[in-house]
Length: 140
Image: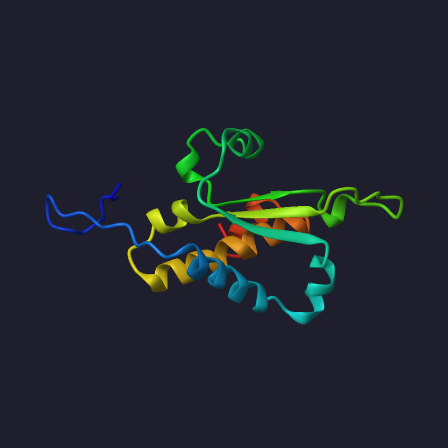
């Protein structure tokens, strides 16, 4: 589905920009390499995945009514909520939703920027930042 663009002539539409799954995964991996070395040690038990779209459970967990609005999801226990007695169990998981990011972007450059922003946003949740904190940092 194409999205309507602001400032375009009447009847004109933006066309969704699409990448292959491998190209998109590469962008996620590039964003992860931009994380400062001092923080990467705290991410070694975090799995980062790419999925086309969120399922119903992911939307429920995120409190999202419309699946197309969910760009990423952090599942786990933020570092700020852990104690020395924390039993890790399953690794924390970040999922980035490819089709939703592509749908909101017109160019490859926009996708690159949005992937980076979404990856950093979800990593922020791992470090205990809430939506207001992330908004202040420009990762909303």
